[in-house]
Length: 404
Length: 226
Image (cartoon, one colour):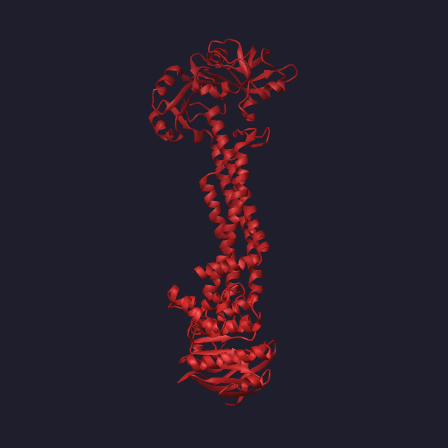
């Protein structure tokens, strides 16, 4: 075996440039696939993280009849005395924060246009509101007793040409089915670096939102953040009663979760397509080698090397090329992924309904993705190399000794 | 004691619609210890006969027995094992593996064998074989660093590596000058006498034929004198 390994290595060294470029082709394929896998994973991680932090939380407790598509403000669709319920939920050990939120739809009238928005009534002092507070770009953060202040997303503010301190007219539906309009002061401009959220969301203190929408002491939901996402199901079980509907982050972000699963399936197909193309280069190299070394194969056969051993020799050569390609791929891909992880790739205002995508995508490479790609690269190349290896092993000694 | 026997063997090559009878009803027996020359003009069937005895090819009809076994009944692996354990080859074109040193070329058949020697024994045997062909000082050289005569001597050492019953040499001096050709034949003669290994070599060179103790003459695919 040692001799076979040495022979395979020396055979590849005969034409170093050709061997290098074969391995490079595989390496380029693997590095690009590594980057794609990492970017895709990073994108969905960020999207899910943003959705959980900004919109859904890990869990939501809602009235049984609440329909988020309609953002109904009818009291029967809301949670009564939400502060008490949030307080009780907060006492559970895995819970980081539990806070009531009121969600209403409306529109903001600017000087020359009106824009549809979602009105988020939040508790400014809750740790769950920290992502908005941390994203404050100008102006001041809200206080719970602020009666006419709102925070406007950076993109929305730019669209309506609003700055901190400016006034705006906000119109919303109310619990009794009427429409109400009121002037507010832009207390501050925030950015969550998630255009899909910032474009459409106006934040105001929960108490003011309840008053503005005539919701009384009601909230649309209790927004629950956990210390550990893996505790979601146990906490859901603990909270589930006949009175409330408890939804998990995966139920609330099914668009993200399903899109992620779909994209993972596409990635597997892409792996196979790209690796099959790059493996073709390796296979071509081995076919050329088999033709060039026909007489040598005849000699090996004449001195008693079995067909299976000749086949093994070619497969070892392909394995060396694959390992070389994988090493190149890991170095090149590692550098690209490192850049994508540390600096990220700016993509601007991109997103879709139900999918909050940040303006910058950060790569995130999992060990599982890297191992899958390495194994796939090796297997696809070896499977491809079966053809030239079998071709070499099936050569008749007499014909091979004549040179084919 | 016979080491190989050919019984009414014929070999027909078919290229398109044209059939070429390379060997026609040939029968010959090779006994242990022989130093036999297959002689005849080009196209007389010498190489074909060597290939059949060497288990490199199979007859279209007739039978070839090597070490008492009917070669045509062996599968590819069994024929490879037969070549590895029983037969040594020396080819006209030297036939060394270009990436391996002289030492490694001689060592290779031993590594393929089922009964492998220890590292020390193997090294000792390779060195001894290279000494027997007067190339101990060239052990580390690759084929492209040696002359044709030296390469052919390495090929002879390799042919002896797995202690074969017989060695088949196809025009072993055809690509060598007179001095190197003589040296090759002297070495083959000495090894035949010292080790008792059987040599069968194909040639049409009168100087080489003079070394043979038995001459098998071929013409038009037939053995005309044995």
